[in-house]
Length: 61
Image (cartoon, rainbow, N blue to C red):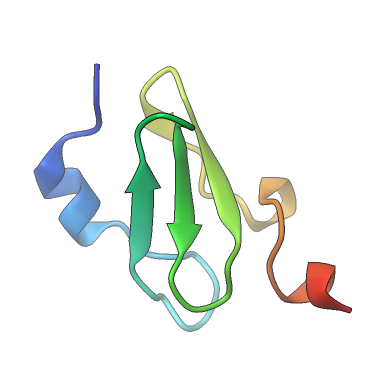
């Protein structure tokens, strides 16, 4: 099952900039268009926890 398109329209990065997220259905991930954090989608549920995200500003250091 894929994520609902209406849900994808309202999802945003949980960081302070609240940028939109790009969905990759093959990888089951959501990627922030601003900071580059990658959030997993587990069992069709987006896990939008900053502590569990991969990449982003901290990874660039």
